View 1 (tube, rainbow, N blue to C red):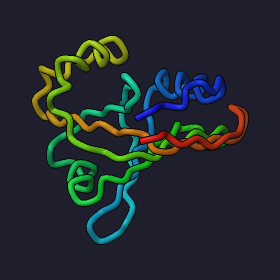
View 2: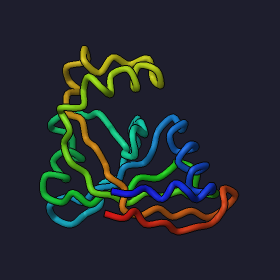
View 3: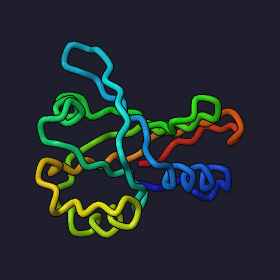
Length: 139
């Protein structure tokens, strides 16, 4: 998947997203209702990663429908990433230092939070003070 980071505005927005304390994670329940909740995240090698409980609503939702949206928590300076989520348990050792650096959180020793979700971006949108744009990732 080719990431359109040659655009300086997108690169700047991805840096802001990576540095943000949390993001909003939206997924779809089995009955079609939206589920939206904040979560800690990291941006690593072109994907977003979150760690959650195996029985969390978002984990159950992506088993049925992997299409998700993530956004910065600022409603006046919008940055939204749409993507495809999948479970990535094999990434635990690679991601542990990334989560430790950002949150001082050892994801290998926090048993309730044992499910890694990767989100591969397919589209991003921005408007407001951060700038305006639309981007698509090539597959």
